[in-house]
Image (cartoon, rainbow, N blue to C red; front, side):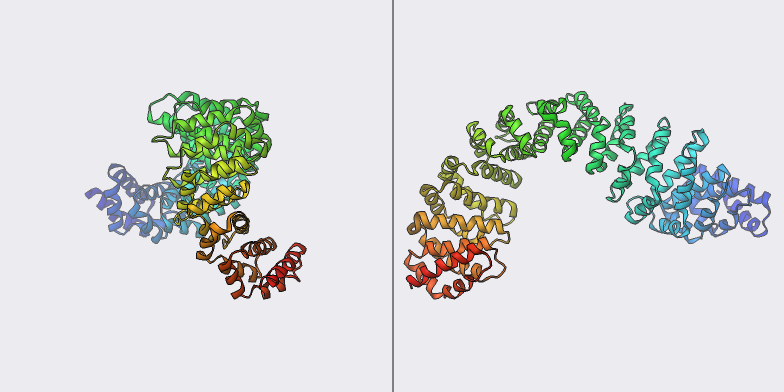
Length: 607
């Protein structure tokens, strides 16, 4: 270290009188000390105030510029040295050196700038102000086709520098995207696919840039899908596959790129990975199985890519995914069920799948997960069943297959995601199915659980779906027995609250159900109607100008229906409904104005 102190003192003197030889020997001594103990040497350089001397040695004319840049690259490996490098004014002269034609100068300058930018806001800002990124991008563009080893090394350093410059910084990433860096990097991947260091650097850069939404359009205009799939096919190491996966996942969120990846043959690669890792017990096998099956599900989220893989239900990919459901691997079961849910996004696919016996596979899967089951698998299988139940022709077939009975086994679940999907599945199944609605609507355990979930204030989705199912059971069964069950279990007050929902569709469903309750068993419901202030809720709905025409119409139907109850009739009179209703006779909607006339007659006749 004494030699270092001596060299630093000499450097101070030499830089002042610009004697090149002595500067050169001091610089060599510094590099030697840094190679020996980087941290200690860097601290010494900082203590002795040497950094501010370096800008004068970074001129294009100076023969020791590359060595000085190398010193800066070495000291900037230490986090505590990055801001001092910026404060010493090293960035502008380093950026100027990017205009050099000398290979070694460019290499060391790229390293120095890259290291100063690493995890340093000050470093990045200084490089941004000095315009360093554009010069580096231009170099990469002009060197992109060159496969000489020295040039590839330089490209690797430059891509690494851009990566450090823009990592986790949206505005700098956007700046690079605007400079057209994406097509250039994609080209590098194609030309230099044999160069491990360079392709890895490109992959990490893609991983950073792909997180930005604005990058997806640029990626979609390149052949990134083909390049990544080609690269993936040649990989044997787990780490490299993981690196490619990390780029594929954010890119595959874009529907255009999804289709490009499917066309490029990614699905076949993923299926191969699944086949190779499904029985593996190593951590990396489990990780690859999860990543590849998750990515497969993601590809199916795009309408075009999904339909292409479905191939009318005869596609080999679709068949392979089906085989995952009965497997003993939870990750595959999950991916299989999610894939079915994604395939079940249009009526044609749903009808085909129900006709070819998929429901049975899903029910068997659910049965395996009733006791101590895997919640994510339960949720995924219920999602698939819910989607399959949407087409009208599927409902009776699925009910006959015993779907409702299996779904009801999950009533005790305390997991909101499972509760939510269970409710949605039952609601889809009973739509237009009077017999099933009556059967489920008279199931006291179900009704009690629904009433309980109608109060799940922490889980708005579960609360909303419970209300909607309660209403649907009444609306589709039109059964006095169902109405009685709902009244006995305390469901009426929840339907009255639902009528005040901010969602018009839910308001309407509630009003229709309440109208049926009043028509089928007003006597039994009277107490609950009074207790939940039904009449005043209806008055508000009719008085509110924002209420949709169907809400006003169904509110008037309900007013007429409750007039047969003495206490409710009194409430109607005390709230001067006649004034509100008579105004509605002039409503622009003919159905509303006609109902207003009828309601006014009823109110007048019974006043």
